[in-house]
Every structure is written in structure tokens, then in C-alpha cells.
Image (cartoon, rainbow, N blue to C red):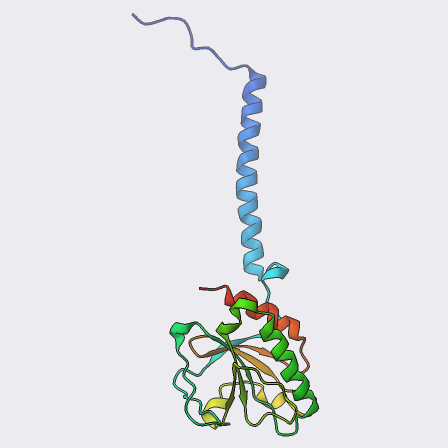
Length: 196
């Protein structure tokens, strides 16, 4: 009934090859997980995932602030429309640099193509003579409750003004120092516009 013959044995060479393959698989799996964990906890990010603007932590909160338009009326945040905002609050002595900034912002807005309708430009205070305005420009009355949510706002002067990105819910999330590269704003905002 019982077969007295012993079970076939695997040759030593094949057994060692199988063990080596198993050890290699374990090393590759756990080694890649270990490297990924080390990169994650050291804060490394691929260059394509880094934003150019300064990420504000904590972000400014404009949800309860109702900006007043210079032409009359109120500017509504309307989070359901998924509209992003570029906000500029230049000082009074910013003239030529702010005219140039208005042209750069118009160029950035146009480069969004079919997504441009999801970006508004809010200019706080009176734009300087010669500033370029397009249909998504909204001129906002300066109000302390509004401008207090923008850190580093006083960094502007005759050489330019900081620019901010406000998300659809009304949080100020990114800041660009005066004299920034407009291409960086476009790159960051293009990534954000892809978010649903």
C-alpha cells in the first residue's frame, strides 16, 4: 500500500539556483520599498512635482471675506465653479513694474487656452495707467480684512508686487515674490487647473 521508494530529490545545483532567485526577489522588493521610504522621509521630490511659488503654510483664509468691486457689487468666491484666482495687491508707487506685470499676467492667462475661463485675475486697488486688462480682470477695493490674508504683501515697491494664487474655495496657497518669472506661475497654475 505504501510506496517504499523515497521522494525524488532536487539536484543541489537547481536547489541553490532557486534559493538565489528567491533571495534576489526579496532583496529587490524590500530594497525598493526601503529606498522609496528613505526618499519620502527625507523630503525629496522629483523636479516635475515641485512648485515654483512659495507654498503658504498655513494658507490665508478668504472664505468669510467678501471683496468689494471698485465698479460696485461684490466678488463671489463660488467654489462650485472651480475658478482659481491670481491676486495682485501692488503698492501705490508701483507703476512701470506693475504695468509690465499686467502684461505678463495677461500673457499667462491667454496661455491657459480652453482652461483660461477657470482663472480670474484680481487686482487690489487702482491699476496704474497703461495696465493691460482683459475680460477676467476684477478690480477689488483695498480692505484690511482682505489684504491681511496675504503674507509678505509689504515686500512690493516700485520694482514690482508679489502675486498670489487663491484656490477655488478661497484659500491663499502660493506666493510669488516681486520680479518672479511669469512662466513659473503658468507652470504651477496649469498643474492646479488639472485637479478636479
